[in-house]
Image 1 (tube, one colour):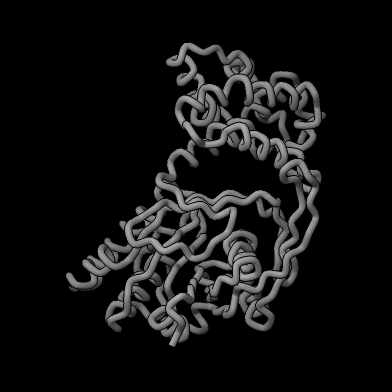
Image 2 (image 1 turned 30 degrees about the horizontal axis):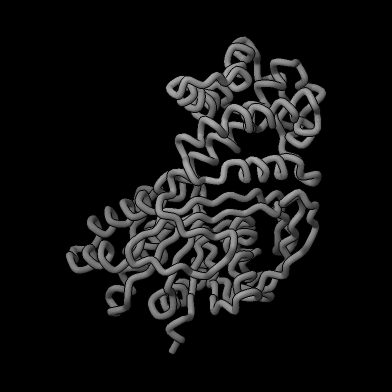
Length: 382
């Protein structure tokens, strides 16, 4: 029987992001705070590369995460041996074991599936032996746990979707309604399970063979307060927040805005052949100096009115640190994809906020006319 304070987290997906984010946080929490957390890593899809990684994790669940970059103005190049994963399973090979563990041990669920991860293909469903899709698998496992009279679980999806937990909950409820005639199960999903919206932020730039990752030092896992929520562990980069939306807006209108503004500025100055990486741009006075002035003098005062108490100046410091990472080849050509749409989503709302506040934001607003006739094809993404 597990200790009541033990957190057993089942994660669906063993990609490099979870390895260097949630799993790293959990390992550091074990080391620094004595947190009793165990992670069961499940390779949900049947991809050959995923199976190979899961088998390697099963043989040796301790793996390195190398942190390379800048944080708080300091250059960091360290390696942490992550030891929070205690079991690694391939769903298609060990479904009975996945079922048993989920039924008897799990307290929390984490996922980081592909962009199409919440979709359920035709013919798939939770009544199949080892369903194909992640939502069908999860519905099956939740029903197994409910039928065993077990408590509900806390679900902490990490997909980069607005209201990710609520979207996942809607899919699960729809599958449960369609495939099980069980009002009690529906009530249990609503009443006993906790669906917590989260926001993740960290660049994990490379995999290590056979298992491991290279990541930037900056990391954020914001989890929205939800009735019944018990946090899986304590970590300085894991934040319980009353509302996730200010964190989403801060990221969109500072970090993402800065990326897209740099693209616009590079195009305007005709520097696409000369400056191809974010770290090159931030070190160029024509770009980096102007970027910092635009963020601190124009964007931060506007957002301070909209997002009070969000420590925006500190966040700008972290952005500049991240952009100056000497080991990260973040290509401006990649950021330039769908540039007009990004201008409208990331920059235009801040210009509109500034107008409502009676503020001038000339550096920010210059991104629009200067790029009206520019072609993002002048920025190479290769």
